[in-house]
Length: 369
Image 1 (tube, helix red, strand yellow):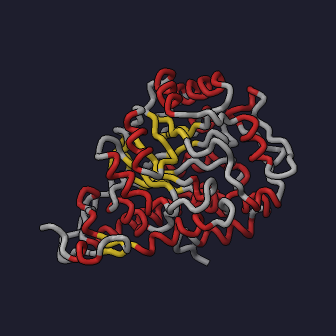
Image 2 (cartoon, rainbow, N blue to C red):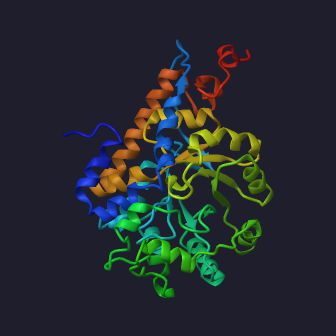
Image 3 (spheres, helix red, strand yellow):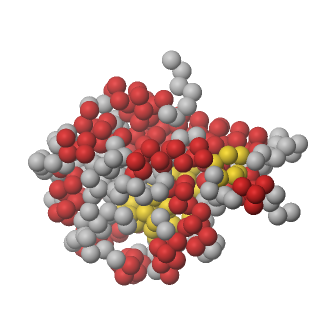
């Protein structure tokens, strides 16, 4: 059966993967309300398409932190990709490079920064968890720099791991034939079996709960790489991110895996964009499954979006070819959405191209001329 959209990979991944692995990728925190809401919220935004515009040429190219990419669709950091497919992060890196876009490598990857760099050219960011041992952090950042990574995505929403009940039920731990490759030489690469979630125990033991804004400033003293703050959901934290010297903000609720009952990322986006006041780019991570979703995020002020689960599900289903296909399908859907909305370039996508159900109905019926 031919795959015609991104969502179809999830069912294939569910058939192919061990239950423990699929549940780890697919689940959210607690009641999983935010997990469903990350998707559902997109359906509460409708289009106001403009007609009779020459859309014979459409340009989706953009720049992120000065790097030119083919489209505003990038790959979010997802952990332990070799659980999905033997080639893991290698396959994802090659697919991103072939699509002309950015891959973000997880701290908890099953391939190291050096191994991913060895796959060939490509623009890559490195997602960072801050460990209690700051020497580990400094060493990791230096390795990412040396391996040619172009930015650090600092995850700020995980002082403790969210309660993911399927991981507790499944006694989740990293399969014994895999390691967290970036930490292999530091004796932090293995995850012990635990009475609940092995990952929750690992985080409790290793990740620094004291992480604060001063650490964002400290990070800038040990690296010249731009820092994206990943996990912002409020105007207050958007302003603090800018003050702390962040080069960009990623609106993320960690794939609905941390605090349940936070808003969907698409609902939180506009508040963050307004607070950033154009001083730094704002990106959206969470819930994107269609080209229409990408357009809606850009109309609300995002400079680009990141996809996570679609990558691991397509990787599990078809390896590198699956990830390539996901990027291609989203690209084609987004291009079609632009054409049917009357937009020929990203700068032509405006807030007036959408109406959200939280807008005042009358205020949006007659936008300012």
